Image 1 (cartoon, one colour):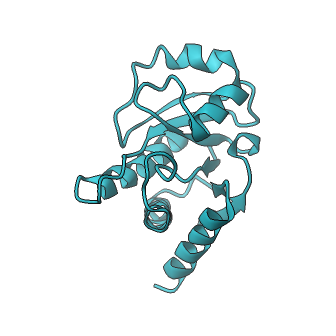
Image 2: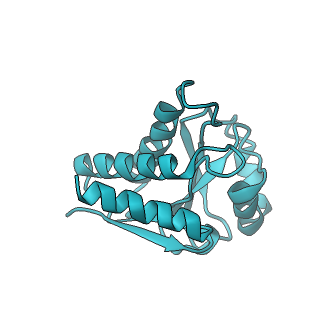
Length: 173
C-alpha cells in the first residue's frame, strides 16, 4: 500500500497523528516558531526529556513522547540554515526527512506530520524546501510501506501553495 501524501493548512500541534516532526535547533531545548509552539503545547515534561538527549546534529533526528499533544511522538529534526545553497543544505534537508521517517517506522508510527523544515528563521527558500520534502518523502516511501499517511502542515497560504505545486510537479514526472 502506498502512503498518501496530504497538504493541510493549520497548526501542527493540533494534528492527530502518530508522530509530528519538530523543526528544532541543535540543543533540542526549545526555541521560536514551530519549535516554541511544540514545546509550549506539549508541556514542561518535553523539555525535561529533551535535556536527556544530548542535542541533535543538523540533518539528524531524535524522538520523544508527545506529552500533552494529540500525537504519540515528537520527532525532533534540525534543518540547515540557508547559506546560499552551496554548503550542503540540500543534503542536510533531505536527511531531515529520511531520518525522521526512519525513526517513525522504528517506533511503529503509521501517520506523520511535517512542518516546512528550515523555512522560517533558517531562511530556506520555501519552494525549494517543499520540493525536497515531497521528493525525499515520496522516494523514502517507495522503499518502506509501513507509513500510511504523511501530512505536510503549512502555517500560511504561500507555503501551502508551494507544497501543492511540488506535489503536482512530482505527479507529472
